[in-house]
Image: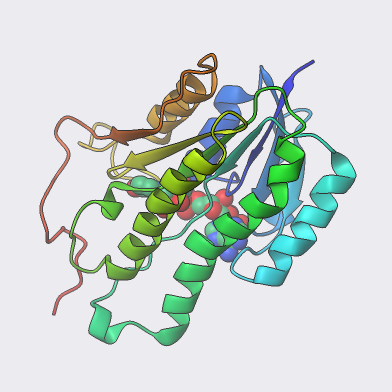
Length: 230
Ligand SMILES: NC(=O)c1ccc[n+]([C@@H]2O[C@H](COP(=O)([O-])OP(=O)(O)OC[C@H]3O[C@@H](n4cnc5c(N)ncnc54)[C@H](OP(=O)(O)O)[C@@H]3O)[C@@H](O)[C@H]2O)c1
């Protein structure tokens, strides 16, 4: 029987590449903000549309998810957005949205699905953080706070769940999900998908706690080409 994997934010970008890469070997449960976000071209996948910037929708998603399956082997907390702004100019609603979607929804979903994961013989939780958690790029203050929050949350959760559920975190520099020309010095979603597959296919008790991903010619600094003008 195929192992079951849930990937949040799987309609495009990194989540979509992960779904494509794992589709042959896993039963896929794919989430995005709305059913209309999906092309629904991956045969046999289960699709879910819930806006995770609203806490209530995470709860509704979990209810529907549990109607479709009472077991889960791998949870990939991938959903997330980036909003760039100098902090003094940040809109209150954008601070709320980033924290709710990028941080709070991951914690809530993970908490609700731990009992389901515990029924698996080899459960794994993977968080999609970012190198922004470790850098100091102007314009990314709130995004960086959410990603650093995920990073640290995962470290503690790994210890709490040791021997039961393995916990891993992926930190990445830029991944071309916005249509840079081919050959640009930036990772592509398929790179992250390859790493995810490697992480979740290691045999217990080996656990890859955390990985940092970069293109060898990746731009690095504290003001990025995308940093807002002050
Ligand atoms: N791209 C990068 O450079 C990079 C680098 C490091 C880390 N990351 C992280 O990797 C993850 C994926 O990023 P990505 O670049 O692949 O993003 P993306 O291409 O913009 O895709 C985002 C995914 O999240 C879903 N989503 C967005 N808002 C949502 C909401 N309110 N409720 C439910 N689903 C929502 C989208 O669904 P819809 O189609 O329905 O909107 C989509 O499936 C994020 O956590 C991001 O922070 C990205």
